[in-house]
Image: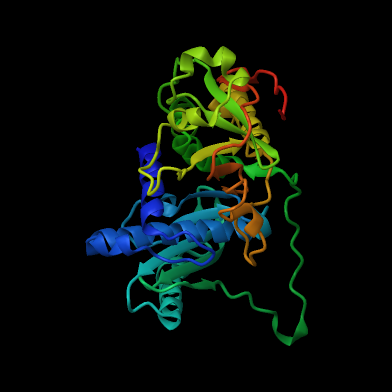
Length: 375
């Protein structure tokens, strides 16, 4: 379901958001019923929130429904890493609105209102991933037919001690720079591999997280290696493409005409030459997590470590202050977004051939040589 939902989101963005340097909604939004427009605005608000949290240095995330099984209002997401690494987690509420009445003042009011109602009451509570020590409420809005958007961030106030006294020193746990909370790393990568169409990996993550019967499926998961923007990305071949039975010559063959059937034509493009995108993962990030997952499979989930050694990557394709137009412009050879945990959305077909393949075995980890990285 999540993989198909990802396909649907790409289709909606393709048709309902205009291309360009500034955010603008397309005229097709007017064809939607009010309920559909509200739903789409909420999804875009959640996406903008995730981009902003990545830009602020947060890497690992989970749905905040893990806070409580009740219907009490709570925020949308939990994040870790960045400024709170080793101390706890942050709670984040997301909001999006697309209406003719949207204004900067209205977006500001909504961010503050939702912070007071859905974030502040849960500060200092304990989640499955650690204590909630900070909170954000992020509101995003745009008026149909107008170029540009409004964004406001409300967050927990950090007060200075009175009288010039210095606060008591607190010694944070000494952690490796690449240590990631296991529970949040599993939650993040479950979503990542779901939208990458790698369901067997998702099933193993579910076994680790939720229990149940251990899977007897020890079949390998196949990935192809694709050079892109100076990196190598792994694209899952578990569910798609006509090449599953011919993986022995994948690394010897490339032509742009094979790219659409390889990724299973996710969207109905507005023009014949448009490319809707394919979710992939940076090779080092994928290898680090999948090898850690195999170690858990071998050792058993009863010996689950508190943290995993996983790389973080600098985001690409978005930034708080801009400055990366060369990565996202229509005339660029590369159009993509890369997140801190390694997930990427490739927005243009790779200009070079594939450079090999990798396989993941549940007990053995990543297999296969990395091959060459240029043509």
